[in-house]
Image (cartoon, rainbow, N blue to C red):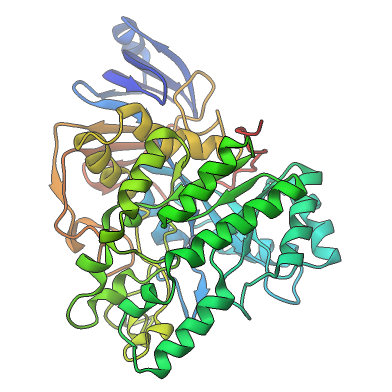
Length: 474
Ligand SMILES: [Zn+2]
């Protein structure tokens, strides 16, 4: 099966060229000018991309499908979540398998592999959440490399659930340093935050906005600094997930200036939503956007700091931390966000985004001139692929790469709303946002999985991808 993508503008993180792309089976086999007609004659399929960008399929390295949280489950499972991702031009996700206390790392990995197997629309990998640092877990971290798991996430937040203390964190970092793997950190001081939450509830401060107020920026930046210092002593690479506070980004920037192997991601919701506009609103609507780290106050200047760090490269990756819960009660899943009516501490943390990321970042980044076209592709596809050991199989268009390709139409436009999304969810964080571009056609390993606003793939097309080591390390 050969496919030619003809007449488009091929754009990668580094290059832009008017060219035709020849796909044989699952791989890109040639990129050339002037060969379109010859190739087209013998091709099984010709896709006309005139006037459109031909870009690498996006890579989202932070999703949580079917994750248990706060007495309920993330509403997207691997089938609905990866299909929504495909609609949004994302062709690879890296999700998180969870080791819970008392369980082996391997058990968590097997559980999540079983959830995903045969259900995914696009390719997928796994990080491991390490919920129980002990001698046997540390040994298992090395063994997981053989399974293509090269990143291990720890939590400084959520005491009593996924929390690790500094000694546990440090031991896991030493193990990562030994194996060449990378620690991912949820950097928030969960112990102090729990004190603030208890005190707020005792005062009757139960509205969604108190979720942010009880997680002030210093509770993030202190944990960012502490984890960076511990990683520096251990000699381990560190990737800080979902950064939202400017004070935390400042700490990361200092560490990078010292030459530390330290990296960071942020998410579209931190770049677009604020307490003033979205959380501190009448009724319970703010619960839709309760997540951790929290959406912050616009007046404090966090968004400008995040955009600036993305543009200069101190934050490398835009991921989604996709973890959606129904706002209104769902027939199957019951109460989700509304579990926290009358007590913000019971609102499940997270929001959707896996479908919206590429389009939203195109509008705010490229159309509104905060980023170049190449930076947009880099932070949504190429940098995450390199960061998680998937490049150049994923994250670029090159001879030999997987034919994960998005044909992006800069001439189209649409408005986000609950009718223009495809996940198992009843709201979008970008309701009413006009996007001056659109994902047009999506290919996953050479197969067209989205065209004309319809899903044309088959459940189970997506395959597990074994990952290598971080390719940014110095
Ligand atoms: Zn997460």
